Length: 239
Image (tube, rainbow, N blue to C red; front, top):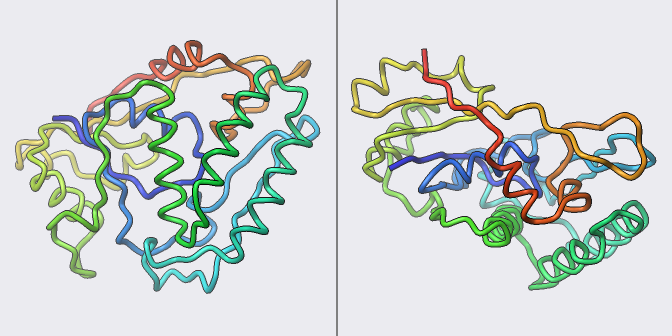
């Protein structure tokens, strides 16, 4: 069984969705410390042909607090402001109507209080939209080694063993964080996912703006085209 473990990100970039597509079980790492200035509550969209970073306001966010304990500040106000921003920015995008309908439906499902809850539900909805069969779990519901003294790799290995995973896949930027021999000794194959260079037409821009939220991908591509983009990656073995 192929497994990945990642913190829940709100409307993450395409590479995050590719990782979900590459595994059988995806674990939201929700009971580890919140990372300030990370991607849990913020991302980039296209505004005036440039990358623009939006942020979901949080209440007393701290790196001493777990992700699933971190609350959104005034969700209703943020939601309304965000939807107006998306409308203003993307209303002339090719697939704005269907994307805006999906986004409105997701954000209006309930008054979210937890950033983990909001981000994970958006991600699972995206997986359903793209026809994925990936199983989703939360690390907080898994009986793995949770000691604060444990290294990140040890926690990942513990989760993998609890799930009987034979392959663990991680984004390429984590290559230096993991020791391949430690995974091999546990009978687990370590791989890293590398997203291929992907470009698509954004309005009439001559220059493609990369590394934006999957929301941007939805605005300019049909679902069947996105499904093709989700397979544009390579898996490389751990060293």
